[in-house]
Image 1 (cartoon, protein in one colour):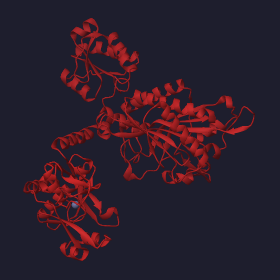
Image 2 (cartoon, rainbow, N blue to C red):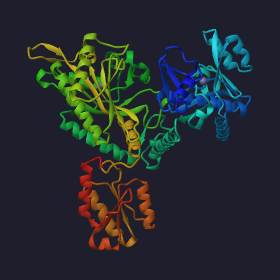
Image 3 (cartoon, helix red, strand yellow):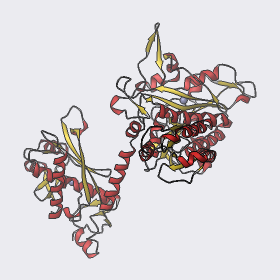
Image 4 (cartoon, protein in one colour):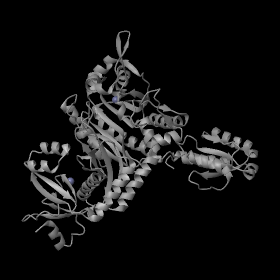
Length: 616
Ligand SMILES: [Zn+2]
Ligand SMILES: [Zn+2]
């Protein structure tokens, strides 16, 4: 009896697309082994959707071979959200080609060709793929003597399987785009043309995925950054180096002011340090050994080598070491918005998210061992408070442990890992262990924030370090008068201001909450007759500490309001004849909601309330 026959008997033939036989996902056409444990695989299961996606890749390859017989076939795996197949073709497929291929795929689906598994020796298989050199190469690499082939309609492919029973059972799919891809991912090999498709068990899921992709495109911080005039990257300055335009700079200043204020309240000392330092400093810190590939080349200054700083740590250690420290002085917390420079290959740079120069909201804490647990606990609280203020309420937390390449003693590593773990447990928040993902000098807690679309972004990090205090001999005088080694914590909450700003832009789609918005209220006179009063309103708002601009152009009211809305300004204050007479404004929210006319002072109070509540 085949699995399909069993499925029919159990009334599952219509829903199951494969079976898990003793844990192994298997074609329904295969025989039912004696005494095997069988579970049905549905298209909605993670295993099922993978079978479905991979089967769709076969359907696509079949369609391509029919339309472009000269195309050479290679491989076509399932991937997240879909599948791809790589072809060797003279000229890459055009978007019109993709439309034709997709149409042909729909015909193949309609014909409901079964996927038929065949087995052959490698010698026999070679004959079955005439003029397909990639299949020949794949065959040569398979260690087994017998290989499996799948026939679907006229299309034969070398494949391990499993697949859906017939083409009618593939789900909802759509071809997305093409890309160049080297054969076997090796740039020494020939460049192939890859077609990407998405595939889901239902049309509803496919549509939802397309909607999210559309939303991601709309929220792209590079696009919004251009539209709202927030920042730019130019060839003249160099890739990965950010120019903050006035509007973006306002947001940055607000972020920085908030950060400085809260750090002062939390007992941090704010410091500044230079952008370059002698290379020797980085030898002591271990960066030249462990971090060289991320550093720019040293600069020769009067025969001495200087290094553009990739990190702020050694500077803060030098400040700590500038005088004798007593156990009573600790903890000492130095915080700096420190700009660092790291070498990233140009191909990996991406808007604000991956750059070569960025400002870390960095801090280094110097502690006694007995302070470690409490300090980490307080720090966790502080981190989550800052993230919440920016509107991030959801996050994933990871505890990253000792990597293969590490500095320092095992004993110290264990102590540091346990301190981090204890803080997380005490705080009662779920976390995952990320084995081997710690920094070379110590373990860390990483917090990945989740944005509006549920995407994760690595931002905050808390790292314990016993190694640098040893390398730099950072000590304090203990209560018994003897010198003791301090423990260091490195931490950044937003991580990089550039990156965090990029995430904020995408999270809010450029519509920043009132406290962050570059302009908080546009004042819009209905006619030129109200320009004088509108000017007064702008002045009052500015005097109250708010960011306001007046639109005094001789344009229609609707046009000016639309433009304010396009600039994502939280409020447009309409000032007409009546408002000017009684010294009131008619606020209109960015979303279109019209508020009743109110005195300017009342509106200022409203803004003040929304700025304090931050996430409003
Ligand atoms: Zn296959
Ligand atoms: Zn550091």
